Length: 255
Image 1 (cartoon, helix red, strand yellow):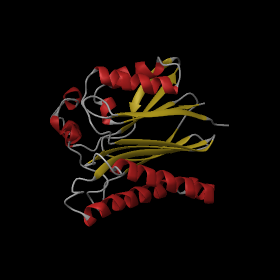
Image 2 (cartoon, rainbow, N blue to C red):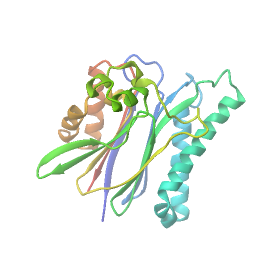
Image 3 (cartoon, rainbow, N blue to C red):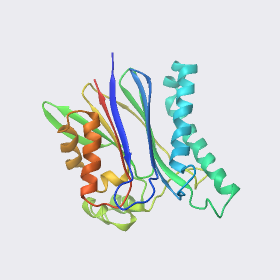
């Protein structure tokens, strides 16, 4: 039987006064887990944040669908995730429609995944948070970014106008090309990927992976004693770089 072990944390980070990140991990069963990370914008110091609104809505709906008909969720997860993200975007957009002056910039990135009993990862993503897969092969660990950043700098990188290293300092790395709450038809990345025993999934906000490169992320996670320690060590490493952003991470170990 597949078991998933996990931990997550969100931190206000370096030189920020409001934490616009939000995370949630819902244990639907020992062999079925839903994880979501959102990074909001246009938030207010008080009141509900767009990241919390969108991620909380999706997590609740996933739990309700699972409790009502587990097989329906697992058989139709890609379509369900895509529709839930669109509905969450419409929910955020309703705030702007109600009060354009107050909620003009109300939006969020969002990255989520459903981990199934048969070791599958069904993910939905838009924005510049990330999912990484860490895998051990013959005693050698490697890290691979599963999602693609929806940013203007990523497009420049894909066109080879800037290098991968330049991407991490380019001003357009924060210029988002797809988010929830702005467009009525956001571009959503959907993926269905197999998992293996001892894989580690990592979901991070840009406050982590823009501050700490993938090779260093790999060393931190592999060198940590457990999921909780890995999350804490990633946030600590990002803070030591004095990167000015909120910092959030979810680590999931597949046993």
